[in-house]
Length: 306
DNA sequence: AACCCAAGCAACCGCCCCCAC
DNA sequence: TGTGGGGGCGGTTGCTTGGGT
Image (cartoon, rainbow, N blue to C red; front, top):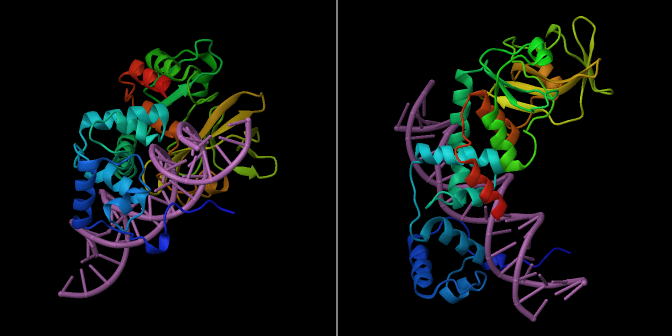
């Protein structure tokens, strides 16, 4: 048996609020407050609305100092930074942006900001970020060119530790994506192997979750989530954790169109193309050297607050 | 001018947390 | 200490609008 509904659904008005309803609700709350009980409020006010609907209308639209309209660059940066830190905790993000509501920010993120980030990603598709699992320093490694298997094995590239430190401070653990090296392939349908070149033919065995390369060596896909980095509606870079026959771990990646059989067969291309995970956003941001960790200490404090 | 489609956004849904009893 | 219910929140829906053909 489900829980009792909060209101009489049959006798409650739904849909857009009229100016009259707005005025009634606004006037009542400004005079009397909410009384600490939204469910009881509609009856007191004389509105045929669900209490939750009244609450939403007040919080998102009627209450004083609500800011509507364009988001500033600074607000964009804040949202991106906080999303990368805490994910889709819209109410917490909204608390950092005076006058903005969680609903506003959520809508803004879903309709504009993600695309804005994608646009940046498209401009720099070959910049990559790698994280070296073998290094005792556990740095993020930034490279302006495509890293190679040699990079992965030799640890000779320069490191940028500030982002790494920021992440560690906020999360109190090592940086995000574990044990991989990232290669961005311009090949439209193939994976680029960190060890031996392009996988023109990706023969995935769905039973043992492995695939073989053109030279016959074996790469096993680990049972971990895939990462997708979308560059547009129909194109994406897809990532999947792999481990080679020497038990070395890395991240396979490939550039794909939606028709790429390899991507589809590998389960790397599915769902909403705007469906970013937190990791993808972090990856995206670090791929483009966007230092959104503008105030790591504040962010950390905020996280501790919650 | 009419139609189609995508983007934007307000509002709803339903789950979960927390607190009063 | 357990439970019921209200509040809060993130995800989703569906209406409106504007641009393109």
